[in-house]
Amino acid sequence: MGGIIGFPDGRLISLSSVTDSDLSEQWLRRTVKPMALWSLTTPMLPVGENLTTPFGTIVPILGLDGEGRTIAILFDLRTERPLPTILGEGITALQWAESLDEKQLEAFGRYFWHDPKASLAVVWSQAHNVQERTVSFGVQSQVHILSLRPKPVLWNVQYFLHRYGLAIFFFGLHTLQGEQGEMVAIAEPVMVPLATKGAVTGLPVHHFGNVEDFLKFLEATGNT
Image 1 (tube, rainbow, N blue to C red):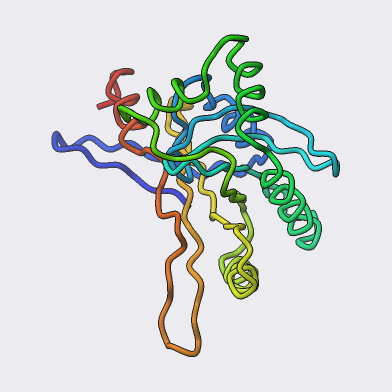
Image 2 (cartoon, rainbow, N blue to C red; image 1 turned 120 degrees about the vertical axis):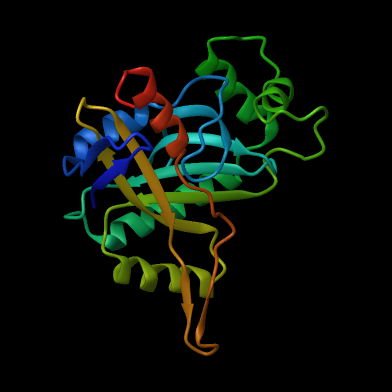
C-alpha cells in the first residue's frame, strides 16, 4: 500500500508502505501518550502499556473507550507466527481484561501516568471531553488485534469470532511513511461476510487512524 497526496497548489508528496514490522511496532508504541486519547482503532484513554497477563500474553496497550469498555490492544505484525497462537493470545487477553475492575484499572493508570493520586474517573472524563461520567469501568471488555495478514484470512477468522460472540476484533494495519520520515497508520476494521444474507455486517468499531494529524504534521514541517 502506498500513494501520493496531492495539494491544491499542485505539489505532491509520496507515501510508501512500511514493511519493517519492528519499525511499525516501535512507532505505534511511541504514539501512546499518558492522559491523552489514542485513536487508531477507537478513541480510548490508555491506562497501561506492555502489561503481562497471568497467562504470559503481552498486552502492548490497555485503555478505556468512551463507553467505559476495557480495550486490550494486541499486535499481529509478524505473520510467520502461527495464527492459532495469535487467537490464543487474543482469548487469554480477553479473559484477563474481563477480570479487571475499576480499582485495578485505576492502579494501572496511576502507574502509567506517574501520578499515585490520579483519579481514573477524572482523567477519563477530561480525555473524552465529557462533563460527568455516566458509565461504569471494567464491566465490558474487547480485544483489538492490529494485523498484517491478508484480508481473506482475517475475514475467515473474524467470521469465526463473530459466530461465537467473542469480543475480539481484527484490524488490517497499514503503516505509511512520507519523504521526510513522517509516519501515519490506518487501521481498517475487518468486515464479516454473511453468506446467508449475501451482505456484510460491520463490527462495533469503525474508527480509523487520524490522517488529519499526519497532514498537519506535513504542513508544520513545510511540506505542504
